[in-house]
Image 1 (cartoon, rainbow, N blue to C red):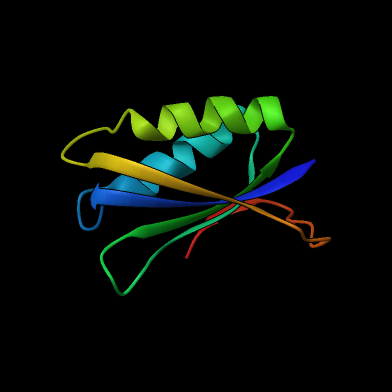
Image 2: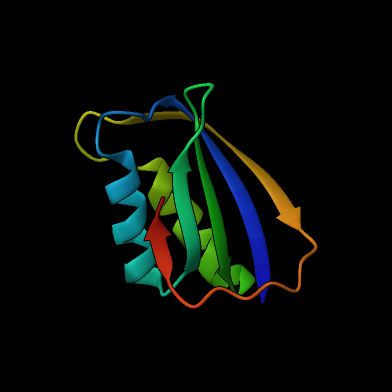
Length: 89
């Protein structure tokens, strides 16, 4: 199991992107959370097997509604923390 930190850049705040991320997480059984950042980006911490995270990240980039992801930064975290669910923070 891996934990990824994904930072979404673009038009991602105030347009339903966190709900989109939540739905994608539920679809792929990804654990973690999503939250807005002060700089206008959205942070997604996602935990699952690598193949699941690859599909999840691909779905995140296909924005829904008015959201537009222009870039998705990826950092693979070295953590032993385990998440029990996926939440919007």
